[in-house]
Length: 113
Image (cartoon, rainbow, N blue to C red; front, side):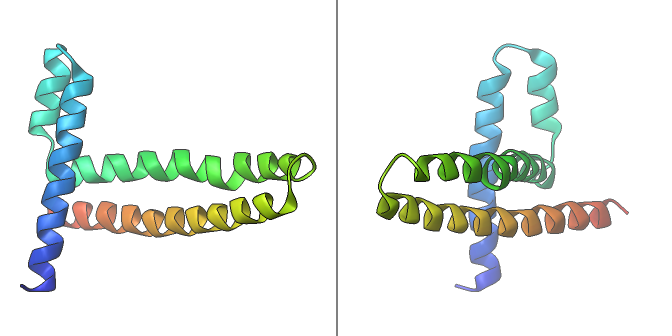
């Protein structure tokens, strides 16, 4: 199986899960349901990537470092070091998702032209 086909299958799986989640969130609002049904795969993927990047970025780069600094004075330094390592991994993941969000958004706008 080629890598492009595998990536496309994973993208379709993720988008179908996100579309199902948006339909579930829409509830009985017909306008939102229609908007979700008319949205393309790249639109849904881009929208969710930006949500994750913005919320996750604020959390990982602003809130959690202050929380861990305060926790460093209260709990064991070993536990805080493990938390910092996990936070750095989360920061790296957010940066990767930011690059992916930018790529999907630019690619989406090129397809419309």
